[in-house]
Image 1 (tube, protein in one colour):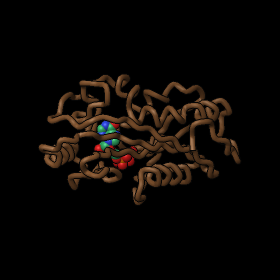
Image 2: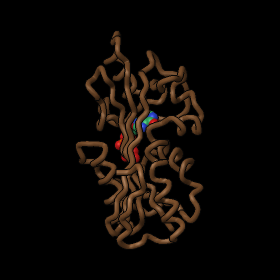
Image 3: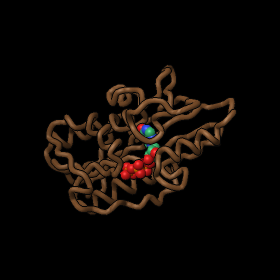
Image 4: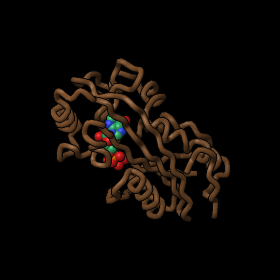
Length: 210
Ligand code: ITT
């Protein structure tokens, strides 16, 4: 069965395929391969945007679609940048985003932050599964490491001394918000792969999902 992996972010794509690429019976395709345009993220929350992306792509393509929306929530900034994480500095430039974040946190005693991800799997006939993942941590004083993407060079997960950019992809996936959110959908994807097609009216939700 073909599943559309609805992201334009190569870092996300790589991480998600490392977690789900081996599910038997699934063939992964991306929106670019199908010539599909980008879905505009007009939702007010990560949940709304993840649902919007997955449902729109499932409708456009007629395939099962998996999408994910994620963001960084910084305590000292009252949860910002949250849903605006990708364009925090006005563009999508990760270096500018990091620079703005470090400037705002200069001298801040509380550098606690969390990454949150919401992953949605939608079938063209309307079924939808949602799974959320969270990683707690803090913002480093300066960027370190060259792995990952986005804010990884300044995010240190709880219990770690390394930033996410200093970890391997496998290490990051084990602790990350995305790893947890995406693995919450693995069971249902495995069932779909086993059946070989998107069954009509398939509405059951595996335990742990909402
Ligand atoms: P898609 O919507 O096409 O999936 P995107 O990059 O626009 O790609 P989001 O709208 O979900 O994705 O934006 C999330 C932003 O949050 C992302 O661009 C990064 O700046 C940041 N982010 C999310 N997960 C991250 C991670 O694991 N490491 C570092 N930064 C991350």
